[in-house]
Image (cartoon, rainbow, N blue to C red; front, side, top):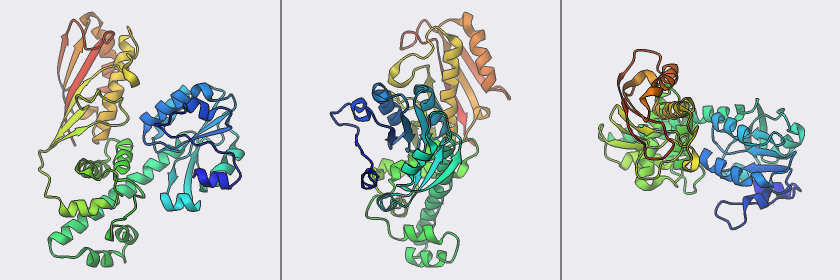
Amino acid sequence: MARRLREAGHRVTVWRRGTDVPVAEAVAGADLVITMLRDPAAVREVLAAALPGLRAGATVVEMSTVGPEAVRELRASLPGSVGLVDAPVLGSVGPAADGTLTVLAGGLSGPGVDGAGCRAVLEVFGTVREAGPLGAGAALKLAVMSALVPAQVLLAETFAYGEAHGVPRGALADVLAATPLGGLAERLRTPAGQTRYALGLAAKDLSLAAWEGASLATAARRRLQEAEAAGLGDHDLTAIAAHLSAAPPVPRRRAVPLNPPAVPATNGMYSHAVRAGDTLYVSGQVALGEGGAVVGEGDMTAQAEHVFRSLSHILADQGAGFGDITFIRTYLTDMDRRAEYGAVRRKYITGTPPASTTVEVPRLFVPGLLLEVDLVVALP
């Protein structure tokens, strides 16, 4: 993509994570700053470091697959003098080289954005489809992947079933060629030698796209996470077919650790949640942001809101909601403030109340934290 911009006559500076040059130096003076990174955490990290170098009047074009919520967070973190466009793409290595990507653009008519100029740059990459206001491009990308990726996992399971019953993959692909699934079946007939769309990125995309009721996407994401744990994260998504054909059946009660990218990362010593069969155990959630800083220090309402937003992301990652909670346990450092906590809790838990325990503790593991909440959830 950078090469295509240069060949189109644009002056281009390329920066990669892990280089010695500060990103603020790389973006200094740029009219357009394009980000193409792995996940929301990477985008937040890079743009926070780039802020000192962004000039007034510049536009950030966020082309990673991060979802609409992350785009809204980026808008809130950028100065008002800097425009923002979300423009994730459909297509992989070949279309990127050929300039035949599909660019899903949101916010081209937003404040501080030269829509015509920005569109002209994006057209270097391929066909631009204006999705709507800021965040619409990110939402459209995840909606498309919520269909395409589970369909490929479904076909991989279909091939595995056929091979287990003596039906060669090629024979099944030949029959499927005459159906609406023919194109995807052909892609899975022979796994790609080159990684066009990494299996690990597909798992990440489905994690971002999780919403209450997304049962197929949730099941497909679990399949991909199992393959990623088997060392296939950097392989092309089509490797899922060979993995499912070769893998023994997964025990229903196997415990699967879960760390959704929409929730600030753990310290590596625990997982945000563990799924065992149809039960989800959610670790204690606290008001810590990226980098481990306390959110809303001294403010029970702000901390409770942060905790319940994190819980909502974890539940949605598994296709669940607050109505699926069977047990909730709360630790408060000051029981006299339970009314403030309760007011927030009632906003999120609105149906039949779950089993519950609330206790007062002298302190939590980081100074300034006022509460911690853990859950047991019966998954749909």
